[in-house]
Image: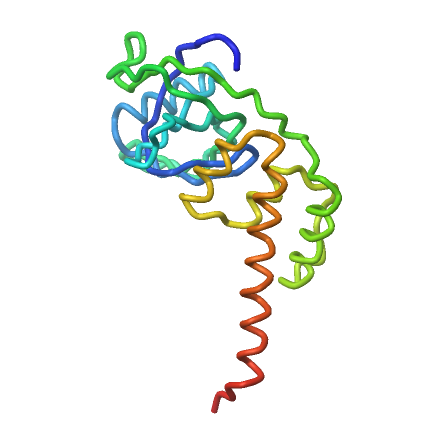
Length: 195
């Protein structure tokens, strides 16, 4: 982790994974201001994981990817992309002279291109095939694998705190579980015949 920096913060009960695209509906005046600043100055902002389980004070660094729709009242539907993960050291009610919050954070500086180990990569390809996903770009980064698995909040929280050496094993376990569920679903189709 590097030095402490002060960034705009958007507290939400979501936890994006690096590389993940997330849709947001912006309607509060302070976050309309944040969106305007992000567009005008091409700045990033943090989504702080605002949840009681977040004892590690983690969040996701985001960049506006696209504006999908603007409404007459100033609301917007946007897509943001996660670029990094951070640890929150201090959350402030406002960021500099703005209406929206800010925070002192330290970035984890994740390697978005980090490749999974071969056993994980091969099992992930098997998982995609079992879901009939045949047209996909390769190679996959470790974060693309995590995004594809649709991890729940608990798993996202665990995943983003893991030491680099434990990430592959964590995802291997999750893929094996998903493959087990898919196999059980296929077996149940053979047992139950629908009218």
